Picture 1 (spheres, protein in one colour):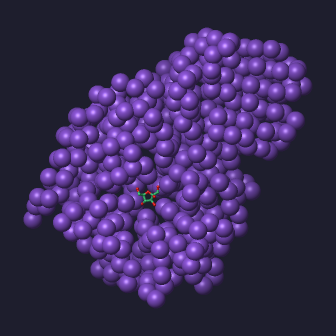
Picture 2: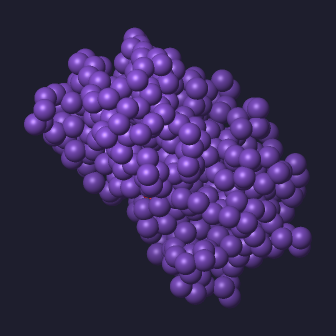
Length: 464
Ligand code: FRU
């Protein structure tokens, strides 16, 4: 049976988005190699999945404005998570069923190996977790496929702000993890399926309470090596809890926690064939007509030898490199200037601070009294200061930085991946130059590579 309401909702939403694509494209400061919708607002990445040779990515999308509202699921696919093809909007609010918003969720493979979506349906008036199934192998058209969970499932527990289902599959069983609040504390609740393919789920308890915060959004649970990592988002920060389940299986017990991807929010994870975990998150950046928001660069989420979470940008991003400037084994007192590196660059720096009291990098530099984006390092305190703020890194003989500048968005990785920052930048700096200052003494540049990057492709052929 065709869902005429859905077809109409999607048609109208896409007409609305198409109407502002050219406006969004006029903004010279809009990021070019960070994933973003054809136009208008995006927030959380949703349900990333590799299927039939493609990475599919969905995202919270407002087709009707540059601010949050009218939540739909936008959709795109990619061969490598670098170049993209925009596909028609996948999910719409079914107004006739009382649905106002299609909130975040995830995808999983059903018993026939086909992706399903589970998401939070808002508006009836309590949240419910709904299913959707694709009508084709390109995952372009979806039908709503019933309700997986209602709040009656966990009564007499009262869970507020109950949302963002995340599915973990194991041979024979699937679990849904939802975020929310229980008795004033952020929590993750778990539901288990009947194991008979019927997709009937029952409540199996609250497996985690946040130690301090009153809400958990977008929980993700993944295996990395011997450990499990529970990712939680709340109040603008993503936290990784590293640990595992208690012996009886009822509680997630963290051994350590860390903020990851500072500046980005609402993580999702994708499992790769080699067992590695790809990490997706959202940067709230905009400020022009026609667009707001992009994804942070996809990263590999891992643990280092002290089981501390690390993020490393995916190697496939190397295909964006167009030309390279390199400095090697150079001692520097004062300033190194490179005039024309562009405003879409990848910078990989390894330097020995020597006797310098301060080291400073300037990007988008245009002239001495002009604004630029600055990253500074104080070798005495191992403090790194970026446009987002300061962070102390571990003492080490050399400073290693990996920075991506994409017009008004920057991603910065340091301290072996323990530090990752994503940020929207000021629109003011408009230059294409680079400066490196060594203040108070000589430094040794062991190596500096600056790659000029191209924008990613965002193919719109199928966005109709
Ligand atoms: C996180 C979040 C989710 C919710 C979605 C709504 O940014 O608030 O909890 O499902 O965004 O757009």
